[in-house]
Image (cartoon, rainbow, N blue to C red):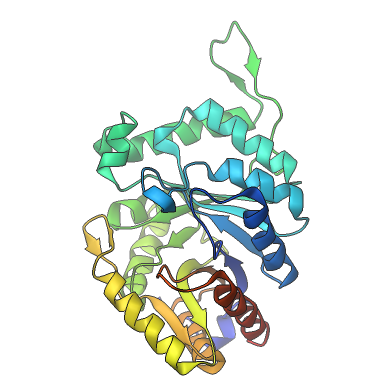
Length: 316
């Protein structure tokens, strides 16, 4: 799927925390969201991960509730809220409460989970994760619509309901043909992985577009992807980060696939040029920035990159 420059939509910018660990305190997390809001970012996102040591983020909804109290306009997003491991009614209530607390600022990005050990730990058969996501989401949508849930004679209706109607925007993190087909069948915006090359993303969007057409789904307005991005005028620092990312890439996997050269690192002009390439080749209009996951990069250095990137995108 290619897009002419005339068709390119204005680029909205999201970001994940640049300082994150399982032991992070609320003030550190919320300060980052405040800085992102002040710098003009459209959204602040948290992933979900379990049993991953210091990088675990097991409760993104709970953490975003803290962020909601310290921000006013920035959207709050989950990149991969894992429905297969959750009770759907409890998840529906948590999502509705966060949407209420934030004044309707939630974007609910869903995921199935790709780690078989994690799924097994939650007593979820990995082969059933897609079916569970669909089934749980159906229950959640019924609850958000104010329908009776559970036994008819009990007449239970969820409260509170989400601020956004009929519910917060639902996006779908997808990796691999089956997940892309599921996202297309749902008609949900596809949130592309930060671990795939531009060429692979072009192939993914072709599969996703085919699934949209097959199920007569309108094309979502958001063409979104995540990228690891670092911007600095210090060439030596950029070269070191690229080298470290290359070494890290050989050890990271999503499913059975090794991470590819899917980062954007350089000075302002180089980064702007790379971003424009994604816009031209994919029609990208929503970019979610992830920090380089390498040792030795200080939070202050990552914050400087975050501020510089906001300035670059404002000039595109």
